[in-house]
Image (tube, rainbow, N blue to C red; front, side, top):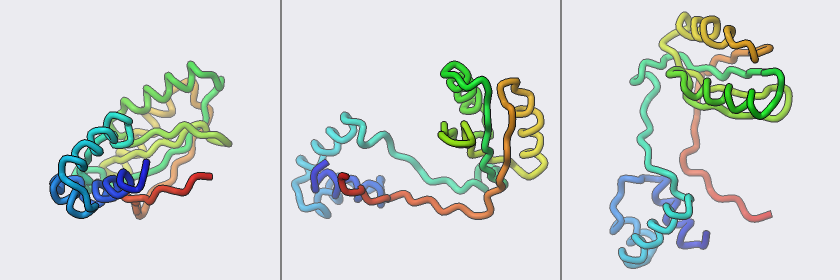
Length: 153
């Protein structure tokens, strides 16, 4: 990405609902140039979508947790199958495949502690490939929605 692409991305990260004309004015190019560059950013997979940031409480997810999971045997098939299983659960907000002591970290949202406990006991503990899991309740969450690009190495 060049400086213009980066400027367009920054503006979209700040507010993806602003018009193309407003973005073009802020980055100092013609609206047609801005529109074309945005289209190319989407085609190249730089821009993957536009999303609304919804409060977890509005989705009845008052309790959130990170669940670290170890699976065995450690094979591509086991990893792929568990990843698909976890991603398909309605309580799961994100699945991370990890290196290190844990094979997965799963971001879970539930109505309350009772529902979180039921999720862990009724869904996760029933899986034969899981040899252990550890749950950490999230008290506060700060997400950075407009990270700056890092310089090349």
